[in-house]
Structure formats: C-alpha cells, structure tokens
Length: 317
Image 1 (cartoon, rainbow, N blue to C red):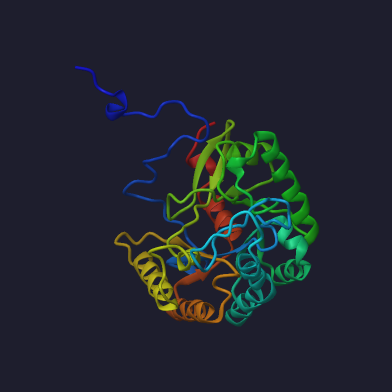
Image 2: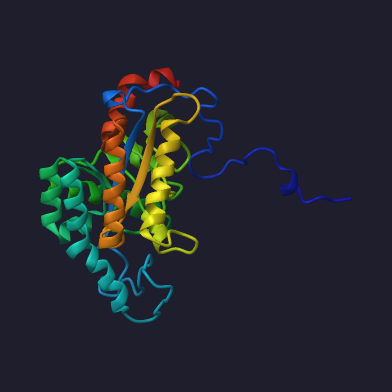
C-alpha cells in the first residue's frame, strides 16, 4: 500500500523565509513591568495608507480593496473606492487625532511613506504629537509581489521618505503582506529596533535573523477595524467596543498575573467615520477609567522590553 507522505509529515521541510516558532513562552511568560505597573500596555496603530494604495491614477491598472461594499469594478477606475480612501485622508484622520488629543494618548502610525508625502500636514501633526511613524512600506504594496531587490529598494525609499516628512527615521517595520525575504531585508538594512509582521503572541519576543538577535513586537487582527468591512466582522460600532472591552478585560485578569500587551488596529477611512470613532473614544474612556492600563507607542513597548528582557537572556548568537 502506498501513502501520500504529506499526510504523515511531522516536521517542517527547509523553506524560504523565517522558521515557524510554535512553542513561545509556554506556561511561564516573562513578567515585564510596564509604565505605572500597568496590567496591560494598549497599543493603538493607525494604518495610514490613503493616497498610496493601488489605483488606476498611479498606474496600477486595478482598484484596491477594503472598501465598504462587496462590489468590484474591474478594468476601469472605481471612483467609489477612490473617494472612500480620500475620506480617510481628508476627514477621518483628523477625527481620530481629535480623539487621541482629547484622551492625551500617543499612537503608532504604520505609515506608508507616499501617503505621508501626499498629505504633509498629517506628517507634521504626527511629529508635533510625538507619535511614532513605523515603516509600512514605500507605498501600500504587497511585498510578496516584489522581487528581493525591489523589496530592498522599497524599504530603503520608505526610510528616507519618512525621515524627510516626519523628521525621524522609522525604528519599527510592518509592511503590507510580508514576503519570505522581508525580515532578512529589515535586519540587513539595519537601524530598526523591531518588526511587527507577526500575529503570534501577546508579548514581544526575540528571534535570530542573519545571525543577529532581532526583536518582534506582534500585531493583532482581532481588535482591528478591517473587520467592519469583511464578512463576519463587526456589524456595528457596539461590536467593536464589546470586542475591545472583552479583550482588555481578559488580559487584565488572564489567570497568571502576567502583564501583556494589546494591539488595536485602525484605518482613517474606516474608524475615521463618526459612529466608529465614537466607539473608539468610548473604549479609550473605559480603559483609562481602570487605572491599570498604559497607552503606549509600539516603540515604547519595544524599549521597555529590551531594557528588562535583553536579547542575551533569550537567544544565543
């Protein structure tokens, strides 16, 4: 009798890209002391992409996705999609920033460089507020569609552009759909403190890339407003609020008294709309009322972790 060997494979074959890391911290994660002895470090990400997405106007020959309605216009410009993206950069981003200003909390921008170039007032506001601009690509492009050399150049151009528009070099990286080369190219480029191209933990962790220790600060897609516009996602702002609240409540009392981090992902064209921004503001009010939650930039979480859990304690190179 002959069997197909893939049904009985118990180990990964050598493949391109980072190895799978399935075990993690196990039963006893490290106890990181967040600012103010917070039980949870809440990290809000603004995915700032509008103006850099795929459009006919920029020569892509296709319209981008993450649109409010499940319709696709092929072969020609879709002005409905384009103007939804315009809403994010014209109105939505400013509503979100008003929410953050009122709450006096910092955020991290996953910033597509071209998006900031096309709306310099946002880059200026980001810098004035002291928010973090992490690299989100030169444009909002799928990195798996690029050759290794194209991706290397896209990373280089993103760094140069973001430093020019905001006054600071990005220290974090999270691209649109990483390739098997992304992490090596980020480490090869140098100057980055972390990347967030994973969804596999509630705490930062160290890995080894090109023989060097490299910090991962995981992201999340559960408390993420993309779920407003995908099937079986948030049907209303209340669903976002309830999910965010339940997520935070569980992390505050997760059964082992270990402080963890919580990622919230937003897009100006989505949560920048009034009803959704209201749910976000109510969640921030709730979290701040608890007295044991730290709203931080991703770079703050990375630096805190590095200080207390240096690479030498976790990896050998």
